[in-house]
Length: 413
Image (cartoon, rainbow, N blue to C red; front, side):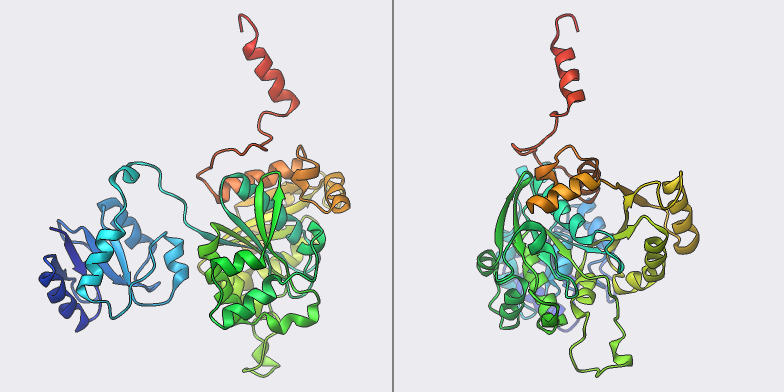
């Protein structure tokens, strides 16, 4: 007999316990204001689908105890997707509906012993004004996430200088994110509709579904905050990895100078940052780029309080910063912004020029580029559970790797 703890507000909690008892399920009401610690013998816990309840500590404790989490009510699909939970039951769900969910959604015993699948994620690539390389990194990051066996979508939500279509040689007339936002506002956006609106782009790492940006910056009003949030909520369930390219402007306090109820110029960027699970914050490796990044970093943390911010310094070279460029950048970010964890991307002009010439991702035209290798390591940090290598993987294709393999295969080696 399954033991269920009902941790929802009264009087619905007691009524639901009585309904579960009629269905032959042992149930009890959790103490008021707390769902932890769970009683002995608990197999499942019914909690509201709210961020205040589904905290990392609560989910981790349930995982360690082998207790299933059944969310009830609420519309926060972001927090459910973050922890890989099933869709929430209705707030008025009856006892038999809870029992049906326990029976139909129970994972097989064999799957419990295997590695858990990584949850679906929304990764926003942001950087301050001044072309630090946001779009280039977003494109290559999407390719590397697809190479790791994850279904990946690349979304261009930049309302100032959209560049994904130009970088990949895709037509500006394609529907893209503007059409997806309109469908989301009408409640007609689903997986099939996203597949229809997106452009399937074959790459060396696998297929990437691309939602191109607006054709002109003057169309920024089509990407309102509500539309973008709804689109990202559906996209999160559609693709395992959503890489979103946004503009560098963070003018979130438009109410100081504009109408509070009117559309806001950079609402798409603010909405994407608030929905993000991971923010790849890109800074250019020069004095101007680092200065701009430090000034906007505090505002970035305010707009993305729940996201994990991964700082990336792009175009690293000794020219504008002297001999020890990385050391100077580390000390500056630590002193003025308190940033100690930094990733560096080298400046590979030849590879980026080849990608622009052929309108392809860098990995397709320069697979041995040092920039590709660095972004591949970045993708490995974002997705710790590596998938199977694809047929187009360049692993073992370098000259040094082939020499090592030949040496191992030699007689007497």
